[in-house]
Image 1 (cartoon, rainbow, N blue to C red):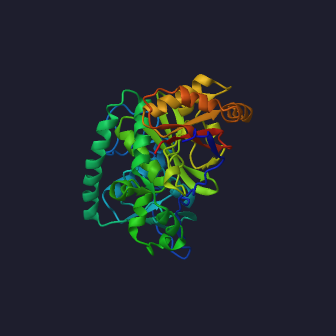
Image 2 (image 1 turned 60 degrees about the horizontal axis):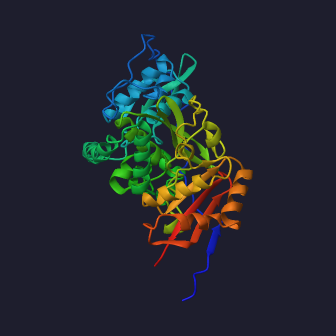
Image 3 (image 1 turned 180 degrees about the horizontal axis):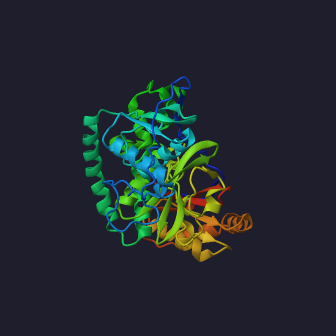
Length: 424
């Protein structure tokens, strides 16, 4: 048999079928003909209320991101926030005002509640309805009606299921000695065990459900909450973000639920606090839905990135003032010596060896500029330095094909992914 010829297959771009959820929506139902009713402002002007307690929160000292949205509200908004939380936990169907807020202010408080409380899986954050009236010439919210996605008796059943399954995950997370490793463990676990529910994203993106008329199975709505993961392992971007937030909080860390747009779609992701600094995480885009199972791999492209980097393809909503993420300490590629500012043989070699030793079939590197990317890929592929590295790898990788390599390059993020081939 003749010598196997070196083959290099360069896949410039693997086509990913990206999916995203729709925007967070609220239903505003004005009733201009409703007569004026007497009433006082529900805001008492008393001292600042305590934030509502929740079972899922870490019992240790509160960090900067604990109940972050609540902390940004004014005193009267905080009182409404507490009323909404207590009502959801009691499965209250309707609360009566008057609440002296504009519809926009009321929406902001509802948004704040669901941003801080990923454990409220039974309440439909989209479909709450409020009625507007006028008192003494001033518009206010007369009443607010909640919509729930399941019967009240089912809530306790699902809470128990979530708690049982969470404990198994949290027990492993607790073994991680640093906050970085806890975040990485939960990032990897969620992506490895979840799949993107494209059907839920497609079918719920319609206006009919806004009036409480569920024209699609309510099970699809669970994909937008932590429940979708624990019952079907199927979620959409808000499910990924809420689940990461929930598990980090249970692990003693804090994460913020962030909404905005990405790739011209409504989207949700996280800001996480690690050792006092803030970082963006997007688990949805780190778990791409691809056209082939071979390309559907765990990614770290949005693991602990800065605001400047996330804003290349994300636009944050202006509803809340999000922390600016400036630190690069735990940026995945920098922290793991996979970030190159010039060609470095040892960086590529060690990166490949470490990936293989950990049982991975792929390793990725990020470049600091297009010029560095061009330099490194020319040396690796045109000058075939990649095959010198493969030949030099330990003989213990006996099934590795040292004459064949696959590559994918993301021109926008300057990330080169190398996939190993194996002898059959």
